[in-house]
Structures are given as structure tokens and as C-alpha cells.
Image 1 (tube, rainbow, N blue to C red):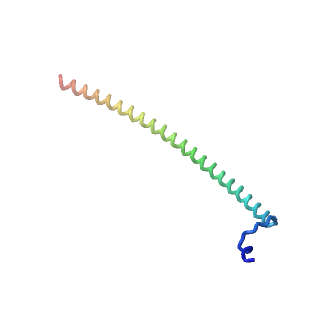
Image 2: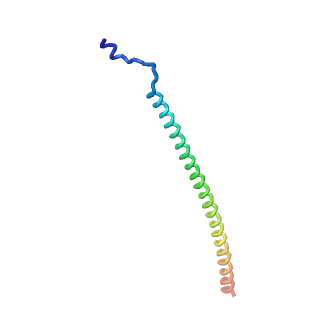
Image 3: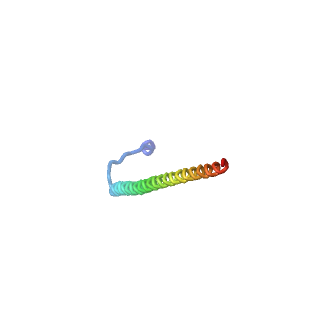
Length: 92
């Protein structure tokens, strides 16, 4: 008799508690998946927005760099002209 109490017995009956537990678990899994899907969608949108901002900043930086290079070229031309004028006056 003591051996029968220690063994695990499987009872194949299904009652309302089992059905409610299964339904509650199924609903909770579906809800969790839905929330996770929404979170992932929001993160993807934020990631795309961040990429667009990076692309815009890179474009602005390239434009600024081109302007700086053009300004440096203009300054170099001005310096060369000044040195020619000053160098020409010293020779005469």
C-alpha cells in the first residue's frame, strides 16, 4: 500500500480547470507575441529614422567640407597674388 502512494499516477480525465488553464496560457502567449511584435516594429521605425538622420548629417558634412576646400583654394589664390604683387614691387 505504501508503494502505491509513492508512485505517480496519471489521471486521463479533463475538467474545467484544465480547460481554463490551457485557454489562459494560449491567450497570454498570443498577447505576449502581439506586444513583442509591436515593440519590434517601433524599434525598426526608430532605427530607420536614425539611419536617415545619419545620412542627412553626412551629406551636410560633405557640403561643408566642399565649401571649406573652396574657401582654402580662394585663400591660396589670394596669397599667391599678394606674393606676386609684393615680390614684383621688391624687384623694381
